[in-house]
Image (cartoon, rainbow, N blue to C red; front, side):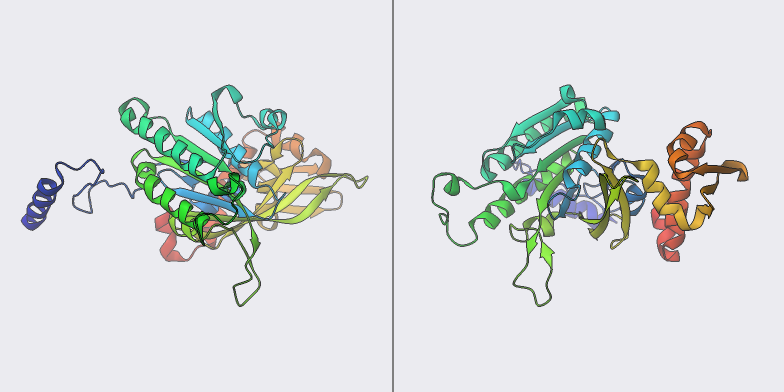
Length: 349
């Protein structure tokens, strides 16, 4: 329609001296709101309920109680982005990074830009200036997916707290800092197609009618994030001798603007090397694909062939059966789509 061209011309003339990054056009044209790619979490069932992984150009929040697997999930996302030759940046507010475990997960520390953040204000300033530099050289880095993770934003103090004044800045100073920081970087995140991931711990929300847990810091991240994943431990994994070797955590998508929300997946997290994707697929497909007979399990694999294995030989069977792992990955997506209402299947495809 000609009116659209006239309107676009008026806006462009009005904003030609502006450097704020405002863009105009018809909604059918490419725009910043489009999800141009995703980064895998390293867990196939979790990728399915997210729509293929965490979205680029959007903000993702991983929240939950302490020691439930939130940081491990972020480390696997970093590893996946490095596998895709992406740019990875990690901000730490807690001095608790386990480099040896990150290497076992597969993270290349030589290709990880690390910032140990002293305050909330510093953290948002670092993100702003780094994304600004990436935006200036966007043509050079446009094919490299950018990932910025902050672990954990809940532990970052504000500058008044560092100066000994816990109540400096007035009521709600920390939430105001977070909201202001997000407003400043949100469009940069979209323009640079950056996946920005915040890790936050939860506290009891005493202001709600029903008892619940939520992340502190006001509503800034809640409103600005496109995806919110709540990680909660379901059970502890034990060896036959009662020695614990990991956790089975449940990840629930409280919010998802890029795929159907309110979905959940079980994520096995081993103490030694993090998420085990084979076991995650087993839990996801257990009812539909795995059949127990005595001490053995049977799985219907590629070309209708049955594979028999004992529980102790599960991983060995996955390695030795050609095409079984890739087949189960595709089956996870098929089973997930079957659970969707009919109107949503086309959207996922």
